[in-house]
Image (cartoon, rainbow, N blue to C red; front, side, top):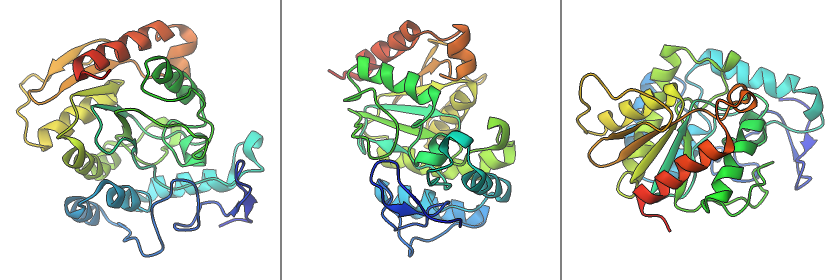
Length: 276
């Protein structure tokens, strides 16, 4: 852990990575939270969690993928030059939002200098700016501002999670890392599925992860499995899966994903989930 630096909003000093239980906004872990350091422990811990808060805490201290642990912590120490005066969360990113959502959004993985810095998924980077602005326009967020975990942002009837919880090098987790992390997403689905009516998958990676999550929850997924596409829908019995291009800079800067296209997806999801 490096020299402590002030949080950009609260001014409280933190080291990078942030130790659990030291007061970072939204951190529900403590020094006593059990740490999964091997894949088998991820499976065991994920099956045993009984509340969303317990799940979030255990996700946030996971160390089961050595390459990802090394990368996220190296980034937290090296930092991007523009954030050199800030502490970095540098830990896995739990899901965030309603604990009984009607809409669940699944993304790929945290950004190295976004959520890996702020501790909240899609917060602090251009993808989050694009995504939360659309959620605000749709009435699923109280504001578009998404700069840190204490900025006042709240989601309505919506929860956001990632298929892989640690920032991966080159935004590319390996198949093995995705498999190790999958039990956490399965547990999140087990704890929230009774209320979820629509899953929005941001990109093909998230689409496949969502299908696997629902299948692992006991649903029958046909063969061949539904194919990803922007605006594609798949009726999975208990829930509707909706595809959306990922709000990456590559997609938003080139116009592959426009604000209107994202607005249309959220309007469709709200209608399907009967969110007012």
